[in-house]
Image (cartoon, rainbow, N blue to C red; front, side, top):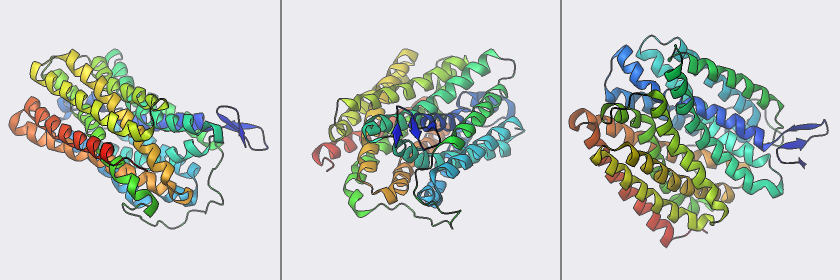
Length: 400
């Protein structure tokens, strides 16, 4: 039975509830974006192109998608808590790779392990946060899950940017700090109640691919299309924005670069909070519309070479992405039957992470021939068309 805002009464006293699970989720996701402001330092130290930056980033996204396809529904069988602990172990191993970094191989290994952690967290942590909430806390728990996801992703660049800029060991201190946070998250996870009834003891993996129950398919199409467009914007800021800020705008302060990336995720969290006043069916097309405006501002910042316009585009685009993303996740998780919820959410994130990876590699490839600014303009133009199409589709065919 639920006991208070963030705890549960399990007969053995008060135990952590959905708020604690959201904190674990946020810590895990922060580790996945921790290297974002540091790529420029790695470029100077190792020596590689802008295309390689986006490939390193894409390795992370590829790992996320692979884990979601192979083990996205695993927490439905084995339980949420063991999967969360496994994700924390992978996150710690990723930090270890960056601490031992001596070239591209360990950089790739760190991003690969980080992607595996994020893949496990996306479905299992979202489901755990929602399921640990009492009947009257479901709306707040839904916001806590998506806010932990986006808030964690945003805090990673901000934390590493500040530590890298104002400490003497920019490529090691951020990862030592994150290792400490991961240890705390493991302790919290150990105390979390298990929400899966009769969990099995390490059953065989049953890869599901991208499949959703029949009752979810009508909701899934517009929701996943909007998520793809919104995550493409996040990918642009996570992989390319720091390089654009330093090469084109002359901004070499790592804390500022981290704050620019943080702003898009902060705005996403704010956008998610707006669904308290806007129904999910209306929030989906509305969020896509705001996302289009934000992308237009980002394109304007590339043309004018203006940092204020870039930040404004991040805030506006992030708000639209957050509004659409929360609405999409609410519709998908609400339509999914409990026994398939983890797998359905994982399928939703497969589409989203495809949006955060594939277009960004295209930007890196285009930047090799056209330059970073021109590649960014082509990218924003394509995503504007996609977001406008997703918003129109959601408006004309609202999810049941």
